[in-house]
Length: 300
Image 1: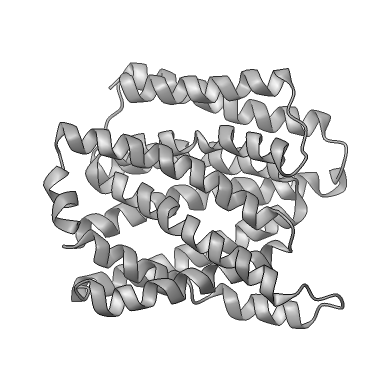
Image 2: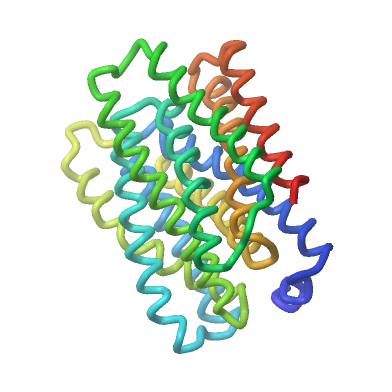
């Protein structure tokens, strides 16, 4: 599969595959966020997910893909540090705010800074039409955030701290998107980078999650928690893996923008499964997000 991926780089077929991977990542990332925000403490869910995908990735990394080149070692150190801080910030944001309040701010902040990062690091340039698409998409995303702030009826006492954590988390989304794109492009075999990425990324949070669980007065049963972790781990493989492959095949900025249609999926998931209200105004704002992504994709 690695040979097929590398053969598509810089081609029209590669662009189309990157488009499909970015949209797949958008949907799965919304599912991933809902899993973390759902039934359990976000720290526990994140710990269960991380240990699950680490265990699943380890045999692949050890036996099924080539070993990473020496020059990837410092890149993996950066991966560990950036993703660990990102996950801490994300868990704090979800602890303090409703899913449909936190998620749009995180996803709206991320792509804007990713586009600038892609310009500085990879020399990617958006056309005027694409910048209009970015503006439309951000109007929808931040419009959702403002709407949620105005009409939120619960957890208002922690609203501003939740928004602060969400904004900083979005900055780290931009950082890890750009950094991971650099890493997967530096690797000779993209599957090697992905396999070891999941192994390394799984190390930090599970020990703290177990400690947190052990100190709870009412501990959730580990069986159902780990089932959620395994499901989340599988979703993470395809979500994070898809967007990283998309950034190797095509423009980092475009992949980041298209992934942020996850906000639309997140609102639908929040409505269907988390019982969070979605009205006509929010539907219009979600339509703006989708329209902005379409303009970016076809305005290049």
